[in-house]
Image: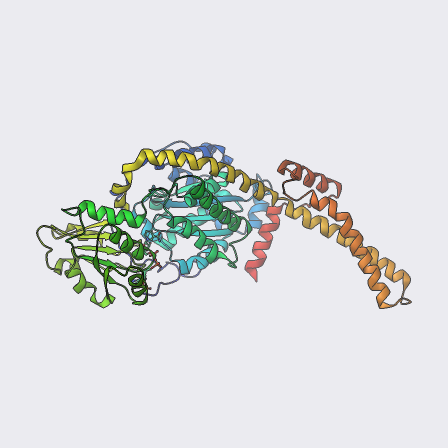
Length: 547
Ligand SMILES: NC(=O)c1ccc[n+]([C@@H]2O[C@H](COP(=O)([O-])OP(=O)(O)OC[C@H]3O[C@@H](n4cnc5c(N)ncnc54)[C@H](OP(=O)(O)O)[C@@H]3O)[C@@H](O)[C@H]2O)c1
């Protein structure tokens, strides 16, 4: 099914998720985990250290909701006004003091059940469009979308923290059709260092349901791959994601976080085993739907657990043929999607892992299927897709039961202590890398000084050269004129070499030295302009929009 565009900018309501499962949003499958309380504490810390808007923040049942909408502080009309108008009319003139911030606004497996997450899931092909829509907003400068089965997190560089958060939240509400008031119950928001650290933990697999699982690192890499060349996936955000990949690799190679760990696919195979009467695949008929990355992993784990034959359904046969080639001693029968119900009728256990936007199995389909053998009990659906491939109400039937990706928790919780120990090992690396990233990010502060300094010298060079050439008049060959020009360029370059070296963040210069040098150069050459950098950014943004 072709997925409709977000249409946020033009259409009143998004059609992106129009056909998705509309299960009631009761959080029955959401178990409050230690990771959740960890995030809450991270949040409290963030809010306290954050700007004055949150000084009125008081702990409540759901701090996320409170923090996202300090309504008394944000005038909704303000969002429609030009940022420059706001800048001028703002009594506190906050914009001139506030630096742009890295912010993550999102929900994940720890804060939202699958029925909420699936409404927000954005297919990879639409990430660039998501970035464009986010960056078209008044207070968003850069953006990235991290949408996986476990999480939907929007990372932005926001010109104003509060307005940025509000704009992103409203955008999330539009694309999902979930009212802001409902969405708030599940959202978390982190700023600057906390946001970076969170992404690093995500890439390391620390925030995954299945600790240390490898797929998340592949997904973070994919964000960078897809974002390349997309306007808005710019320096800070792409730098942060690239750094997260380094962290993910380091944590996996320098700690034993991934050793013996389960993955989503292996947990799915394990969960089915737990639910089968004999805890064995020897006598059950297995159907796998979807032969993408996940489907392939499920098949591999099934084989590792002794399953020797299975039927695999996919839209196209190529992927199944490739798997068959890899697993030569296993009987893998390919069937097209059109035979889905007939194949399900012959299966005891059905694994689903497709990227279909709409459910493949509705309750009325499953109701019509013949009963499985009495030894097996009920037909088992293990659905690891997000959005889900099997309607949740299938479990209402006496003849079938469906488990989704959140139910994998049952398999994963077993190793809680192991989790904690491994997570602590990884934290040292994350802290170290987080400091390195901060130093790099702060060193970007010198970029405007470098540009202004170069511009200042260039203007002097150009003016003096023109004066000199006009004094000489036309009595000079072009060759000699060019030589004088080159001489002026070369002198400026040589003079600038020293200051430039001292503005560069490398092993020879600490960040504090660089920032001190930057301030000194700004003073010496009077490089501070009347306008704040933020104000200039706003103007540039408005200029881009009016084109
Ligand atoms: N990657 C992960 O780490 C991960 C973890 C847990 C859960 N999941 C979930 O698992 C599902 C599959 O992810 P993946 O990583 O395996 O994706 P993938 O590698 O892109 O594979 C997508 C699969 O879905 C099939 N498909 C796509 N659109 C379909 C449609 N409209 N109807 C029927 N089949 C369709 C594809 O068939 P063709 O080969 O014919 O195109 C392919 O088999 C997703 O819902 C994802 O959220 C992924």
